[in-house]
Amino acid sequence: MQQRVSLITLAVADMDVAAAFYEALGWARVDSPDGVIAFDLIGQTLGLYPKAALAEELGLDTAQISGFSGITLAHNVADKAEVASLLAQAKAAGGRIVKPAQDVFWGGHHGYFTDMDGHIWEVAHNPFSPLGPNGEFRWLGY
Image (cartoon, rainbow, N blue to C red; front, side):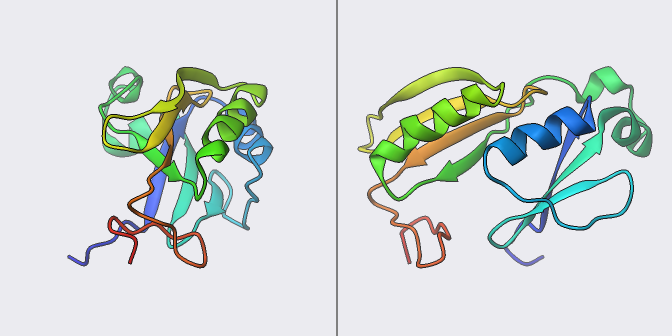
């Protein structure tokens, strides 16, 4: 298996509400088949899929794919000030701030928000991992 994540699928209760949230963050949809809303990212795609349909596909009860699962999604930024700005943008779009922007013991700066379905996003500035020329993140910055 190659070291990459191609598609991140988020189970959502209301496709239109979820799509509007990500569009309010400045993301643009790409053409996708009915039943899926897709946003191309740098090197991956984020897909929104109805929670009930994903549960059925997996053979699980809908309640089994709800709530925080121990996974967070991270969006790294080039500048420390961008963290608070993006958290404010997420809040204005209807998200909930879990942890406000603050310095971190390891020397970075971050905060957390949830989308409408409780998926937790970290917004982080890591001075030890500068972003590449196209905004791509690499652990050591290269």
